[in-house]
Image (cartoon, rainbow, N blue to C red; front, top):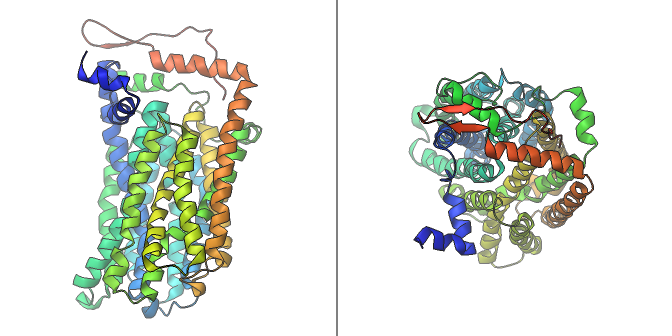
Length: 496
């Protein structure tokens, strides 16, 4: 008995192998080769693009506590209003840009094109003279970034099977936290080394460096971003590999979001479960980016104010990877409860507030476990609704739209900047939001299992498609070439 076989018989060992076995030996050689190409194309650009987006978001807070507030006279709730401007436009751009993202011909070029404009806006932010200039630029950024998150998740779920998706989504989600983390170090370095260079404040250099990083990554996207399986074949993929990719993930409809999609989606429970859960998730974790305000109020140096919160992002990066990866082989509800427990405890501690500083540090850092929540939820959507681009795209865009729609106005009452750093209303509200978020998904997963049991005809059709994707309809000839053979014409097609 080999070592690998022995490890697989152990439950923990089997989980570990599952996490790191991205190219299973039982896959045909041609399929493993395709997966490697997809990983290089999707994960590298997708993660770097996600990194750039969250680098820009965190740069606003870091610039605010590093001199921008004083230079622009941005006192009171101005930081809140910057976020409101971004979120309002982000909401407005969700469904229009996600609709474009579901179109096969546009999908390979939409995100790289938008990212070029992100870079231009970053350069413009380094030149702002008045606070209202930043409102306009943040709103424009929000609209143009609207499809970056949901669109990338849509593309991930369109190329990979369920067991493959969870592992890769975890790596992609790390770009979020690493972007925020890098922003802290970047601002500390800019303040220390560039403050005053060419007459520019350190916080202005932060936006210049952001643009310099973002622009070349956008051009990489034009070269490698694959779009959807229904998009035109990219240069690095052979015709046989493209045919294999289409065969691996059976789809019901390929037109994207249409008016018919709205009626179809709203008649099923997934939309209601996921959207309501995400609305509370956005509010429950809003506070995790506010550690810097507490540090600034206690007299820490600007460098430490930018560096100490990065440990939240480090923990968020690790937890997002672990949560998403393990969701493919462990209990989703167990992982959901695990992350919620840490965040719930942190919210209670910060609600009390009059605790030792060491406990406050622990509470803020426990907020990093919130990184598990969104990846688990979105991966569940992708794995449950893999066969329908339109329904999946509509649910993801609806989650983003309604989640951020409420984020436009609720934080003005729960986390107004003038109440920093104690936020006497914000942390108690976050405690309630965290519990509600946890309860919705726990109940939703249970209800979906019942709902599927009550609709066995849909489950039979889904199982037929899963069998088709596992078999792939592929035979390898003696020469090693791939032959795509037709499946049974009478095989039912999944509609959910």
